[in-house]
Image (spheres, rainbow, N blue to C red):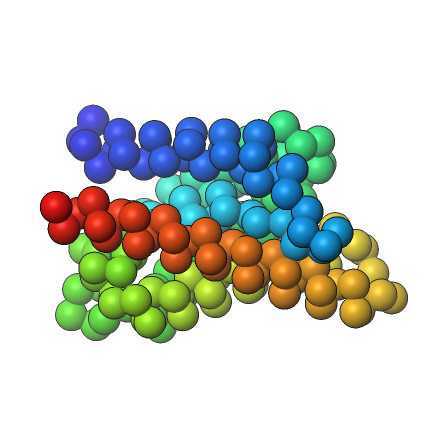
Length: 170
């Protein structure tokens, strides 16, 4: 197994652990919960087989569902994100290095990476919270939950990428 594969496995385990035992306990103002485990799907390499991406996305969603008893909600949202990830990469990635890149501040630049991560995160949160509420009868609460969770998740992704950038420059 390559060192990239080992890093992906360790990232998977770390993100599931952090999500289940730390981030799911955070509910700012009763609305905002960081859903940082989506970072795993965002960081998968551009040349990874699309079927494998969907399987890994389903697996991370299933792991979070098993610990949180959410009956496949996270898994469904992760599978959709894993499926559209290829198209988001084609939209946001620099054209000359699309196939071989690992999405990051280094390969995309900060602004482009945050747009890519933001689009993936926003779609993920919209799917997750609409399915979780099973209605649109309280749109203001839904908007607050999506917006608050989006801000917290993007801030965590930015912080983690900044830490990775600082480590990789040393």
